Amino acid sequence: MSSIQLTDSDISKFRAARILVVGDVMLDRYWFGDTERISPEAPVPVVLVGKNDERLGGAANVARNAASLGAQIAILGVVGDDEPGRRVEELLQAQGVKSHLYKDPQLPTTVKLRVVARQQQLIRLDFEKTPTHESLLNKLEQFKTILPTVDVIIFSDYGKGGLTHIEKMIALAKEQGKYVLIDPKGDDYSKYRGASMMTPNRSELRQVVGRWTDEADLEKKAQQLRVDLQLDALLLTRSEEGMSLFTSAGVAHVKAQAREVYDVSGAGDTVIATMAVALAAQWPAEKAMQLANKAGGIVVGKLGTATVSLEELQ
Image (cartoon, rainbow, N blue to C red; front, side, top):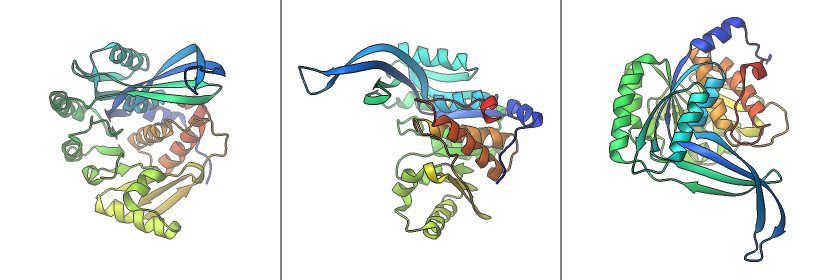
């Protein structure tokens, strides 16, 4: 399979793509330091924090990835009326993402705090709470308003409760002829029925269809799931095994990009964002998969949730 070359025409189509990301918005915080001794209080390392970093996480990382490819991105989600929520807004603005975030005063913004020493993550601390009924209904009303102004919708499900009304949202999007991509979570995929494409990784798919014995068994299970959920396509991301795209026409594979893997966190966000931008630019799904595979291969060579630029894809 020849490597993908982006033309000027492709890039201008990417810039014209209008994408809405809906889902669980979070802030990724990193504390970097060094550790040379064990605490006298408990058998744990003492980390002397030298620097920190903040990045968009969850659905916000998907939006950031799509924006880095030049597309016009809007995001719909819920954050708290707090300092991390304001930080998320600032970071989205810096990336050129149009923010439609509802600030829920009863909710802390979801934060994942990672402590990293010598390139190793020592601990992750999560701060989160399920959004209120009122904030989710507000989001549904906003969704109806924004929908006519976009071409493609990405639902980024991190299981934090932000996509309670996803079935209604998918139905509304399909009624208006929009392409709908889902990054799924959990073991109940029935709520995603009727979407255009779903992008599970191996462990996510296994949770739903069970283990497979060989490629033929995998294809049978994946296609059955695709038919049951009335999806046009199911894109399976397979780490070192590359990707497989299941459609009514059969299955297409692309091999993984051979490179040193540094950090896989957020790679799925990069893949679905790249797929969405390419599909919004009217690329066929198989060609879009090749580009998404290339983008995923680049991003795993970076630490933490990261993005890929058009220049890197060139």
